[in-house]
Image (tube, rainbow, N blue to C red):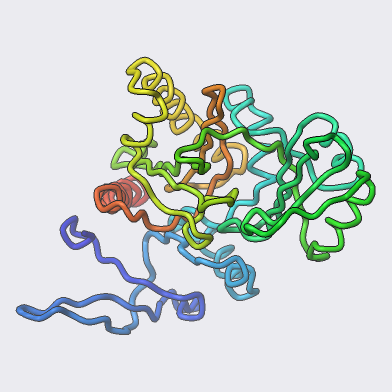
Length: 337
């Protein structure tokens, strides 16, 4: 795709970038005539544009990676976008603190004894999440027992039986024992999600900048949780479904209800990226948003990801590559004339 746009693209790891000489040891795909092609390793001149696609937080946190990212962000001849992972707490504060996006996210607080007690009084169901988790790892769901005599909790990724606590202070102690002491956690209002065939689902929308540097929606898919699970990620047993087929069922065939859902989705995708860019003072080019549709018809943002995985849907993936290359050309022209 890059070649069809006249772009030379290569891939590199942090250790391949020589900051003293501005040369990079990297990899590119070479296609020979009549052959399938192969990956080659070579030394290249420094890139004009860098898109950070490191897939794991532990890799990005390494000292040499942080040094390189700091160098790239201040280099006058290099444009870096999506420079790092986002954390849930900073995303929530940015969106909840802006009048344009206020109310788009479920109420969230840092996990501590007082906040847990307050949230238990306000809501029948809560989600406890690591501030930096991915694919649903470490999420705990907590809810009041049906008879209002105590609480029960379990891993959101598990279909095991619920564990029970009589008092809120016992619940806090039990939750605390199961947490990684080196991580921060959030408490989030549990969403009353619409279900399909008895399973919860959410929407995964991708937004990115186009050839004019403007945010556009690449596409949207549906991710359905496995039976008796509360997270929709495919690694946790979730599955994908066609957006329009699901929405048609959920809206009961009503064109008006479907239009209301799509208006909300469009508004979220048009508003959130620019708010985050300004609040976090970060150059972003691509984001994915996990969005829940509640039973009252309201949409809520569950998560925003600056390292979106590739869509399984072919048409969305192709559109993503087209917009990406258009944006690279836009950056090149705006940065370097």
